[in-house]
Amino acid sequence: MQRSGLVIMVREKHEMQHMSIAAIARELGLSRTTVRKYLKYGHVPDKRLGTKRSSKLDPHKALLDELLKRGIYNAVTLYELLQEQGYDGKLSILKAYVSPLRPPVSKEEPAVRRYESEPGRQAQMDWGFCSYIDPKGRQRKVACFVMVLVYSRMRYIEFAPSCHRSYFLRAMVNAFLFFGGVPQQVLTDRMKTVVLHTQQGQAVWQADFERFAADLGFVPKLCRV
Image (tube, rainbow, N blue to C red):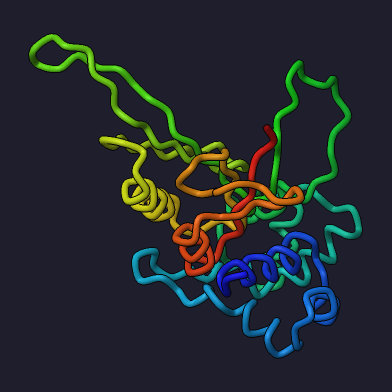
């Protein structure tokens, strides 16, 4: 297995399956030092994507988590309690942090269940085709790349002459720039630009895409057939 593929596997087990460094080392036959190195690999901030900004809520998250454990989920109440401890950020920042942590409310299930995830955890991408009429009245088709953030449903769309790998990787970078960061996981269809085939239920990725995923720090996953 190429190094980038092993990096992805290590990060997936640590970030998605919540396995410890020791457990990963035993399962993959690696040293703990190597596992730690692979977890850091790909996390160097990419100049094209900028750097992650700190939040005014960061110094108060320990207290906030303790209040949530006590069953206090009302954002206004939490806001007032944190203000007493010196929090001077906006209520909207607090609401965005608390919202995914609230317990589910019992209600009728929708006809189609929406897949949900935590903020920044997963994005989904795919190619499509759109038709247009050129200046001479002829019908043409153009490739359309779409990436959607699962949590917010925010989407990025880019048109390209074809689904070629160069257009595909450029569109992914542009999507991450548009979103302001890279999600932990990117769900993809079985497109030829990303996956060669599956082996014992595991994806065998295209080498270029595998390196791209490791360098930018996301874990690629295949969607169900």
